[in-house]
Image (cartoon, rainbow, N blue to C red):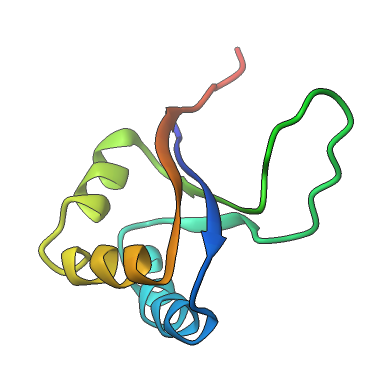
Length: 98
């Protein structure tokens, strides 16, 4: 069953965030992830979702997502992302029809 990393970020330091994005992209692929949403325009239609830079990354399963997020390789990039932005990150279980 697929699993998703969902983030809503507010970039505070665009240069640092660009460095993070450059370094994290190949790492995401190595762990089987692929971007579904990567900071495109947000158009609220109901409520006040307070969405800014939305990122959704799909992984083959929750184990792959957790292996990526908790890897020693990703730890310094978490620190870089947190220095460059603030926001929310969550893991979401996917759905397989049938």
